[in-house]
Length: 94
Figure (spheres, rainbow, N blue to C red):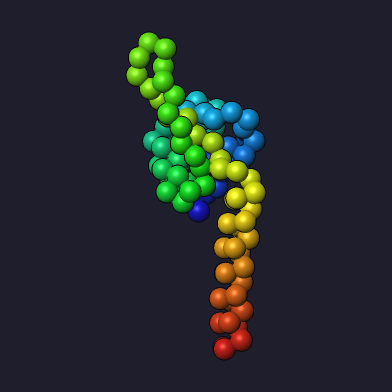
């Protein structure tokens, strides 16, 4: 996770409702394309959920929010444990 993705992760963690890219961009005071790239990356990593919202006058937009906190905690713990194990093995065999 790069810095932009991490900043977005922390921002979304504080939000109660799903938000669209334009709103996130405005609230974070970051370029829309930066938010789009970070959202896509977090979505590819299955960290955020994407929902389609139909607009009253036709059309739709997408909104995003973090996945369930317990799911994310489990995935983060698994990643940290895997990293620790690989570093520990490396040091042991050094």
